[in-house]
Length: 169
Image (tube, rainbow, N blue to C red; front, side, top):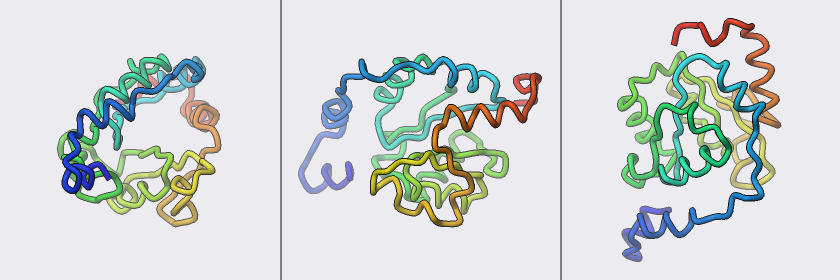
């Protein structure tokens, strides 16, 4: 983990994060349908990442989705303690005054959903075929599985109806 690199190898976290997040996004297209679905979802949308804020901002800006997110809780905010450490989720909940019973966590690593579910959040695993993403995907703390986030959110906003963006935040 980042914390291990810091403590055992004196790695500077900011320098390391800048290096590993310096990636070419040109092959990743934006998704106007996902943009439309996110526009219809009520409530705050936060990014909770084991990466850096700048990386999350670069990705969401590239995808044309940055305007949907109210804030980012990154690895720096978690003091370099990564998900799925339950204490990090508690910090997130405190910082943003999150009500777990009315919140949904969407994640591509199934094991990261356990603390969210244990705290009362609904959980959605975005299916991936990577071994680190699949681990825990057959557990009860995975409430919903999305093979494709855009399609899955399309089903959700269709159920919400045309006035979804007028619901209380």
